[in-house]
Image 1 (cartoon, rainbow, N blue to C red):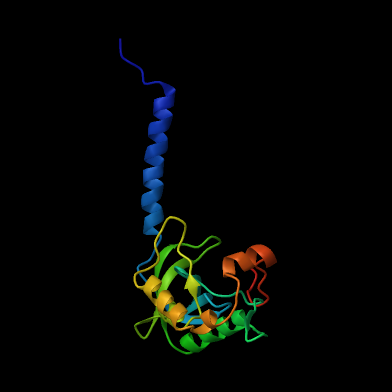
Image 2: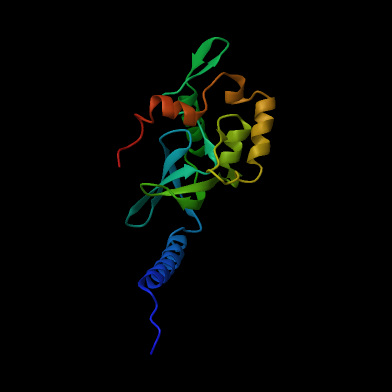
Amino acid sequence: MASVTPPSRMVVAAALWLAHLTGAVWAQQLPETVTGFAQVYDGVTFDLIESGSRYRTVTRVRLESVEACEIRQKAKLAGFDWPCGVVAAAWLVSSTMSRPVECRPTRILKGGGYWAQCFVENRDIGAEGIRVGMYVLAAPAGEVALPRYSELEENARQDREGLWSSEFMMPADWRRANGSYNPLAPSR
């Protein structure tokens, strides 16, 4: 008499096989690079626009391992409020304007697009934003930030660069208290 595998083992085996297959497909969905011109919506998010011969491709990108003040967020310096979210967005615009941006996707962004490490003229935008105090570290839970980012943030903190010269609420805390509505972001 042949032995029969209990249904629970078959279900588990099928689930593991499907998870393996799905994981392989999921990993294949990350391109090595995406390149185009940035249309900025906040300090760390933009649409990467690539114009082909017939079609225009738009890919949403969010910089990996960093956060900036939200567009509506303010910081306080010497008793005066300053619009740290607007300044961060303006900084990103000036860093990318009219120059090709090359992004190396690290993971899929909820709603479409990618989290990515991005470069303009071989300069890491995230690292530069941390160095000048426009960004703070925001590595995903259980992960470490991209190489050098922690050291750059510590230097910016010590030198009181950008945000670190002011009193401010960390962006994630500010969003929890005030919501994430961004009047500049297109609806998708």
